[in-house]
Structure formats: structure tokens, C-alpha cells
Amino acid sequence: MKVNDVILKTVVRMVVFIVLTFGMYLFFAGHNAPGGGFIGGLVLGSAIVLLYLTYDIETVHKGMPFDFKKVAALGVLLATGTAIGSLFFDAPFLTQTDGYFTIPILGEKHLSTVVLFEAGVALTVIGTLVTIILSISEDE
Amino acid sequence: MINTILNMSLFLFMIAIAISLFRVIKGPSLPDRAIALDTIGVNLISAIAIVSIVLKTKAFLEAILILGILSFIGTIAFSKYIERGVIVERKSAD
Image (cartoon, rainbow over all chains, first blue to last red; front, side, top):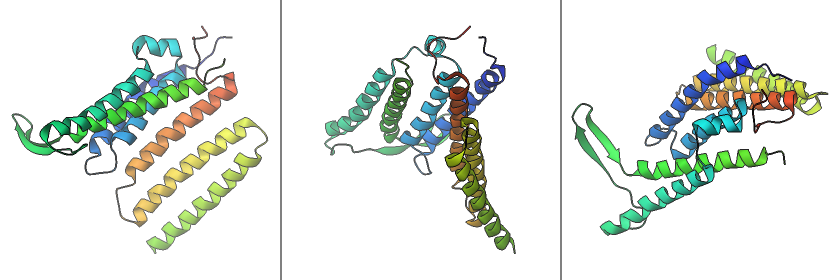
């Protein structure tokens, strides 16, 4: 039986970009507003799950050839790596630092190493979420 | 005056969510449950908007967006399960 889901595929093709943009906004807003790595990772992961729902595993893997278990492992490595990095500067484990830098075009910006830690958390959440959804949706 | 109207609308949203919850639990067929869950999502979004007017804050706008996204994904997953019996396909049908 040929399935007819033109409306779903067309809508999802637009909506995925809105969801991904919102996820990145939540990820970067986490410093002084609601958001952060965990919630941003959940929203980004739900966008990927939406792609898997609309299309199928083979089509999505053609465009996104990641093994999501390895993505989760990379996230944990990144988070603990930034945590261990503070030990080389005689600071306690998990210490984060920040500072104000003047960037030529953008002006003075507040940069912080906690963004790297949050990126690790986000990657872990994305990998775990997609792995769980794909595992429990298997038929056999 | 405006506060009375807002509180009354919150009460009405509560009643609407309770009625939809009854349909989710009792609903004779699966499409009834899917539509009732979608209705609960829309009513929750509206209720959060009313609450953020009452509290005069913008902090709930992200919650509204996330609830909309999750309700959309949930409805798609539910209706795909009803239509085809499988949620994530391994290979495209055609």
C-alpha cells in the first residue's frame, strides 16, 4: 500500500528548522535565563526524533550518519574533559572560569568555559534520547 | 475586573481539561484518545498564557513553545501508530 503523507513531510521539513533554532537559543540562553545544556539537548533531540518519525531510519541515516551511542560517549568525554582541565590550573575539579573579551566586529562579549561543559551535557542528552527512542521503537 | 475575567477563564480551562481527561481515560477508540490528548495540550498552552498574563511575566514563553513542540510530536507519533502500527520505520514503504 502506497502511503500518502505529503502534508506531514512538507510541514515537518519546515518545522524541524524552527525546533532546531529554538533548541540552540535555549542552549545559549542558559547562562542567565531559563535554558541550558540539558533542556537545549532535549529540544534538539526531539527535533531528530521528529525526523525519524516522519521519514525512516535509512533516509535519516543517509543525511546524518552518526552512531548516537558514540555521540553520547563523546558528550560525556567533553564534559569530564573540561572538568579535568581545571586541575591543570591548580583549581578544584569542575571549576569554571569566564571573562570579558573584545571581539573586532561584535564588540565586548562575555565568554565562559561553562559553555563547553554544557555542550558536553547537550551531546550526552541528544545521544541518550535518540538511542532510547530508536531502541524501544524496534519491532523485533 | 480584568483579573476576574482571567481567573474565570482559568477555571473554564480547568473544566475543559477535566472533560478531555475523561475522554482520554474512557475513550472507546484510539483516535478519540489522540484527539483528546491534543486538546489537553492546546488547553494547557492557553492556560499557561493566561497565567503569564496574571503574573505579568515573560518567563513562561519558552514553556509554551516547548509544550507546543512536544504536543505536535506526540500527536504525530500517536496518529502514525494508529495508521500504520509502527512508529519508526526501518525502510521507506515505496
